[in-house]
Length: 94
Image (cartoon, rainbow, N blue to C red; front, side):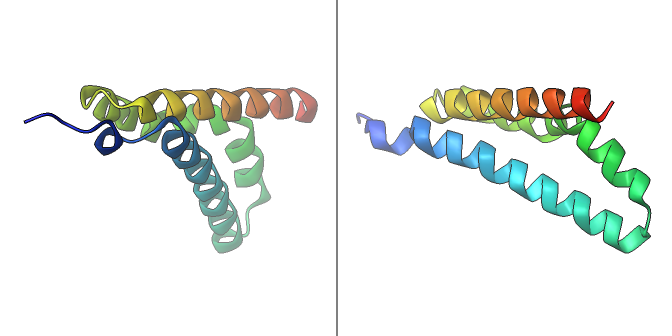
């Protein structure tokens, strides 16, 4: 039986997933700051945003890549864009 290309996801879905996960990471960082009342957490969280992102993006990319999904490419591009923005913000904060 032949698989339909729409079953594998699309580039846009992977890109939206990557951006959405970045927003969730930001929200979780702010929740940790609010719960601990420690502003140092926000500095560390934002300076190392790209490194923290690797914890969840790499396994998700591997999972999507095994399914030969174009969504894996969208996820990788979104993660790269978020990491580049993170690095530029870290440079400004430093």
